[in-house]
Amino acid sequence: MSLACSRSLFFTAFTAGAMALGASYYLEYAVGLTPCSLCLAQRFFMALLTFCCGLAAVHGPRRVGLSLYWVAALGLSLGGTTAAWRQVLLQSDPLMQMTRCAPDAEALFSNLPWLCATLRMLRGGVDCAEISWTLFDLSIPEWSLLFFVAMSILAVYQLLRLVWSALQRPLSGEASHRTLVRD
Image (cartoon, rainbow, N blue to C red; front, side, top):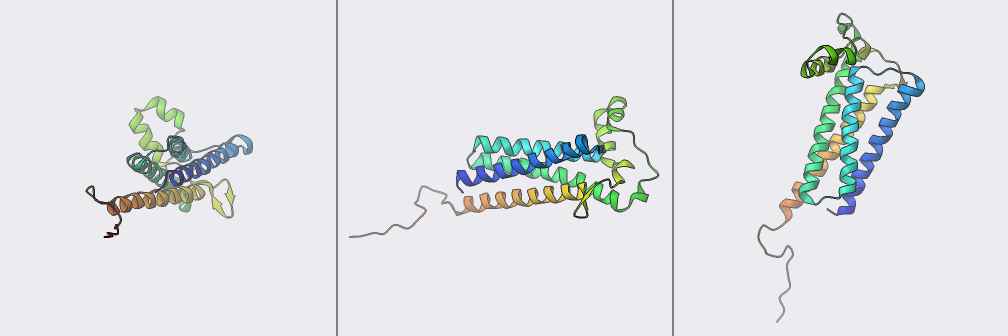
């Protein structure tokens, strides 16, 4: 796998993540939508994933570094997928969550230990079940879920490609191609 190919993939993922983050900030500050706790969790994973891809694009690592960056991207994508999937489930059945009301993220983190507040934030609440904006009949968490699933698929594909290319290389110092012996 060439270095230019991996750098361009990381740069493309960085650009897509930066555009998604920009859209989320636009919807919050220009349109006036207030993000719920699961939206903030998705934004956190998106920011870390964007930073990781940007760092990898600038760094331009070799085989081991590529593997580490793709594993990190896969982990962050799976975290974002989990948060987005949870919110999509809440939006599909809002009556399930109408009985429980969760305080906002600032109140959670000021009154509870960090781990308990994070777990309660990831459970979601009434505000997470509300659909406030759609594009092409998909809500914001559904778009976020599509992005994270696409990034997960890309990371898995690139990791499998790295494994495949490592398996194709010879183990010893012998040449990787046949040489013609001429007398």
